[in-house]
Image (cartoon, rainbow, N blue to C red; front, side, top):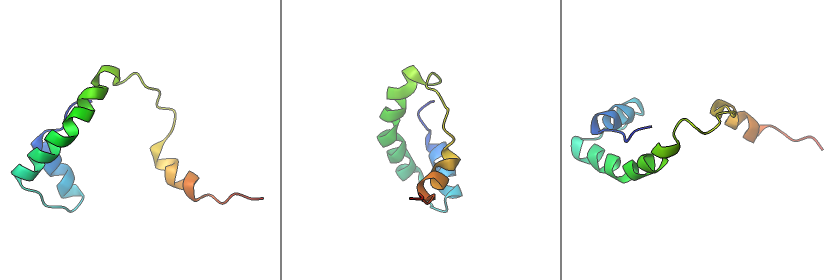
Length: 65
């Protein structure tokens, strides 16, 4: 897990359909970068036992009473 670069931010934004220029992409990278750096020490050590794709299914499942 590494700090995203300006180029990566621009690519991600483009996939999402949001146009950003270099200045904005750099600001985004600078604002979220510390979070990535904070987790760098434990990256790859956390269990990945929950599939994020199933969150919506779990949240929308009806509970029978």
